[in-house]
Image (cartoon, rainbow, N blue to C red; front, side, top):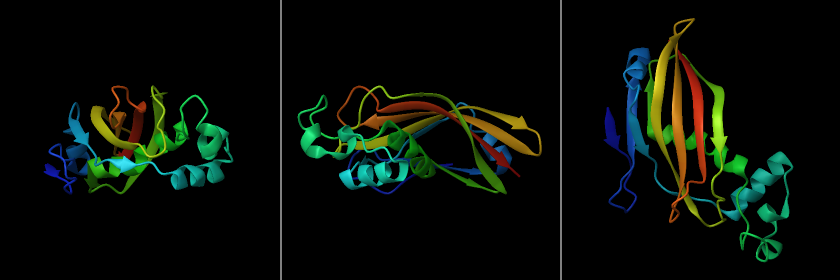
Amino acid sequence: MTTPAAATGTTDAPTRTTADGLDGLLALAGRDLGHTAWREITQDRVDTFADATDDHQWIHVDPARAASGPFGRTIAHGYLTLSLIIPLFGELLEINGVRMSVNYGLEKVRFPSPVPVGARIRLSGRVAEVTAVADDGVQMALDFTVELDGSDKPACVARAVYRHYA
């Protein structure tokens, strides 16, 4: 079932899909999950990520130096953009009736466009496939696109794989 999520002030409102149990997940194969609300990328978030990963490259954390760099301002780490798929995915799909869900990995990740600090991103997703796996589970492959507000190119495209167990 798909329902509108919280209003965002745009006519392009986000949606949230709910799946009940493994049968509900299997029924999602090939389904477009829509998109999330927009989320602003702040310098504080970028700095916190830099501290967590020990990646303090100036293009991420030094606004004065980055102003004269290739992007004209600081940009988010690619892996920060990728990591935001996890909480954003929770806005797209609610899964009930499973005992455990695990991130099984990624099959493909690309960063076609940098995310400038102050920009807004949102996630769109499509369930590429859902297959039964051992131990009373299903494996879902999802195609995600992290959209960059005002850009024709996405910030990130990835195929993520999750396993869910009854």
